[in-house]
Amino acid sequence: MTYSIIARCPKTGRLGIGTTTFSIACGRRNESVRPTVGVSKSQAMYIRAHDPRALNLLEQGFLPKHVMDVQAANDADWDYRQTGIVDREGNAVAHTGAKVGKYCGHKVGPYYAAFGNGLAGPQVVEGIVSGFLSEPDAPFEYRLLMGVEGGQKAGGQATAGRYRPSRSAWLRVVNHLTFPEVDLRVDLHADPVGELRRLLDEFVRYRAYYEQQRLDPASAPAEEDFVAAL
Amino acid sequence: MTYSLLVRCPNSGRFGIAMASYSIAIGRLTDGIRANVGVSVSQGFPNPANNPLAMNLLAAGFTAAHTLNDLIVNDPRSDWRQVVVVDRTGAVAVKDGGKLRPWSGHMTGEAAVAAGDMLSGPAVLTAMLQAYASQPAAVLEDRLLLALEAGRDAGGEKGKTGPLRERSAAVVVCANDDYTEWDLRVDQHDGAIAELRRVHAEYQPHAAYYIERARNPHKAVPAMEFADTLKASRA
Image (cartoon, rainbow over all chains, first blue to last red; front, top):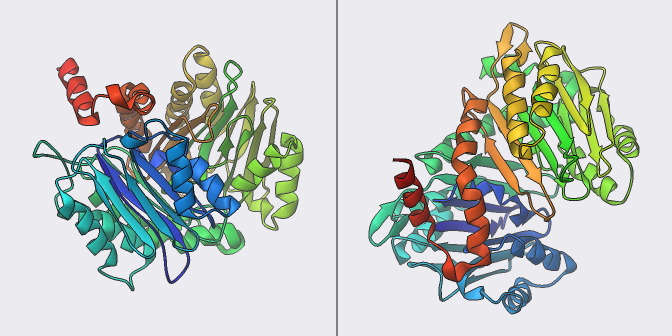
């Protein structure tokens, strides 16, 4: 019971993930995104070691299709896993095992993959994609968020017809640098997707200031003064 | 404007980092942690690029002291940083940049460093180390959270016009895997450490479940069913 959008921004080359789930602290899966390499996100009855291995293979230069084949061959319980992989060129693949919780499914586009399980129906995957594609000129981090929001608006997660609200959400975008450009988490919240949007709007106001702390601390104002001026 | 505790657990060899800050989403700086390698952070006016670099240097076999020196030499603005490095032997190295805002400093314990800037005073760090040492038999994530709470209760952060309440917090632990074992964050909240305690308590009964269902998916109880059972057992 998770749905995700992973993508490479066709304009900036940045890589990112937006995800939400019933499980607590989905953003602890920070091994799933590697700058200038790609994104591999396994979910459903996932094994955490899958994502670092996939990224190690991508880093060697293998294509996502090959990486996915290797993962399948290395896992006796592959039918229980759902995985999406996007590489630094935007090549995308996804796998939804036959034993993953219903409804489950994925949709792969030219530079993205949307996938989920424990969903209200196929309209949720469609909702992720249409949300992600709805404003192609928006900043990449907002496009990813709109993908997650689109999935939620389309019905989100449900078991046996009963709606199951998410409890955690995560947004990470990496650029050419070695550390994330955007990395925001809601670990346990009654409305994690709404809270994630609030956090992103808030973080965007701070982003240039935090870059100033890194690159030009001598001229950076005290943070309490910066906050007071907001 | 951050206080942190970085440790290598002498019992298990695990690494841990706990951070709290008036800055938002401070947990984005907790990526300098790697199993069997070490843990490091650059705070004050942070340079997040230092954290992955520190991991690469420690993984190459350099000591904490050598790694710290390389980070300082490499960063033209190192005077504004507070850099902490703990290596796989438990050796620690710390530099408090000369331009950090007061009160700033660090204290060391056994394979442990408490460090911070814009604090109400050194009592914050003393309290953190004491709380960390007070329950040597507890699991590392619990000890780290206790330390954050103690730092807050000893006065926490202070700005120009008085106390600054922490708005974000994180506790991260790495064991043997190439991913973190315990990794919880609060990115913006009026009582970030109290909120982290709430998330921590809620996550705790799920931790083993998340591992077991991956190993044994054929026997796994669905997550929602598990949550329902948990809820019923508490009622």
